[in-house]
Length: 327
Image (cartoon, rainbow, N blue to C red):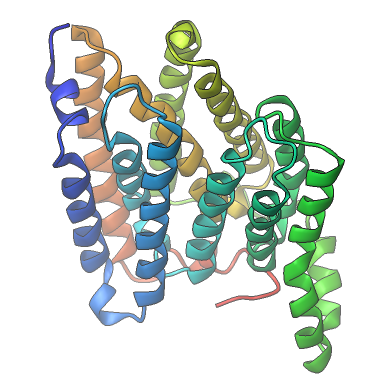
């Protein structure tokens, strides 16, 4: 098989390093040295490491490649106007940690410990963004259909894990006489903010969403037509990715005020598809798509970076969502 530019980059041991350097440059340009974003940066670093572990442990690509993590970092660099949001950084970390543990339960209906910790992280995420609870039923369904690990024991463990953070949060809320905020927070899960529309999203946000959706569509169609080349386990995991991605997109369509947390989730689950597409294809057409994609990605990163350093560029979206714990 002839190696085009896309294949050389996808299999290069320096790809992840370059993606990490680009991410650091974006953070610095966005104002890392002028803002207390070190915890957010630490969350991104840990998230990156966990994603490397998930890719390696599950052999998401048939060849040795760091492309999954590299794509994740470059897509995340598109969210430069939102990098100061600590709640969003924690949500990213929690979702990656959750699926890392959940995937280890594949075809193991006795994996109560891993299941408990997986849903524990989703519970933590819901403290910062209540809508995270919408993904719990999906995780249950996918654990039954894709991972084949759902049983009465693992379901009980998942419920216990999800509720555990609230056992610690309730005393804190009662002590601060803030229990009403808990009720209000969760009552808004299915409340739609009709005052917020896509017209309020910045050009950079719209460009980011459009680019990622196009790449996801191309990657998903390719995977579906060539899925027979992957092992059954890999097909099941990518099925998991696809369902969560579509669900997150659907929620974003009706609740665009949650662009920040939902895009973080979409990026996590789209990255494996895009990495799979560019790593395991080799033709003039896909190589051209790769080059055009890189150019567009660079442009989108530049647009978002410009907006992030512009005065009050993201004021409306940084204050449009909150959870029980906010920063």
